[in-house]
Length: 183
Image 1 (cartoon, one colour):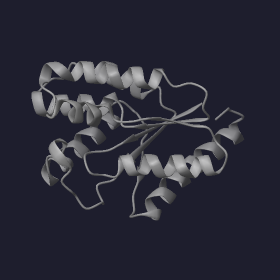
Image 2 (image 1 turned 180 degrees about the horizontal axis):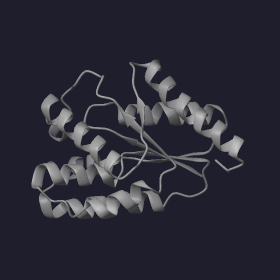
Image 3 (image 1 turned 120 degrees about the vertical axis):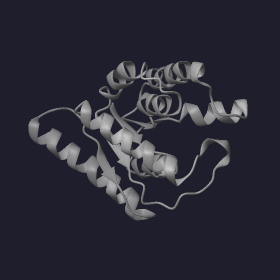
Image 4 (image 1 turned 180 degrees about the vertical axis):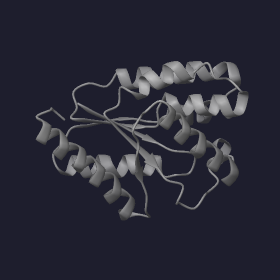
């Protein structure tokens, strides 16, 4: 199973990209597992954003959702615990989630980083605006770089964004095949 993380700040098209990639891969006959963003589900259920003491449980729920998926060729994940750790850091000054989040991020064989090239749109209680999006994007990039985690940028509007992601996936598969590694 190839595990793919789609990271990015708010309003960067992660959820849309997840759906488009899943449809594309399924059309090719692949078995695709999906893990949705736990934070989005949590906010919808609670009618609010989480407090500082609720962040760790949300992160653990995201990990459990990934661990529960079996029997697929590709596992596509709409964000990872790393994004929860970044938000916990930026909103609450809490750095305690980073060790687990970084360790979990290393489990993904491919990390796609959604660029901030899409127009920002309000989406209920979960979105904070352009400034917050840029701050999260900057911190996320810094954490990835600090920990030596490779993330491939995904950019473009509409079909171009999907093509950008699929090109990275294809290159990863070609490189793995040339090295004799299973992907």
